Length: 87
Image (cartoon, rainbow, N blue to C red; front, top):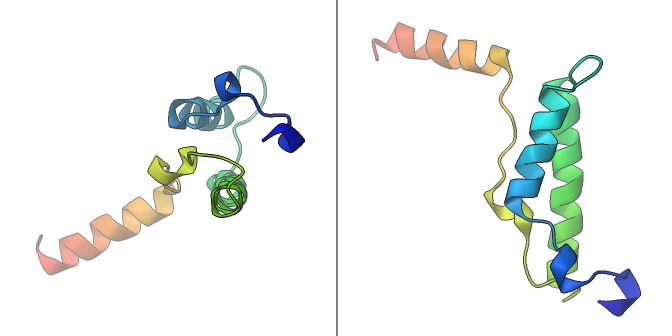
């Protein structure tokens, strides 16, 4: 890990990622990012951490517990389908 300049006390946790997501959804200044933009960034991090674990650069993957954000459209579609099925 020396070549990546990562120290054990600087590991990113899933809590850190959730705080980062929250910051993108509810910024102190400006407009929140689109769900698709946030998911694209999450997928980039997943790819990086997957590569780092596979190549034994890191011991843990904080992205394992992180799921993509759902858009309001996805939730509405789910509710619509459930309503049509009588669920």
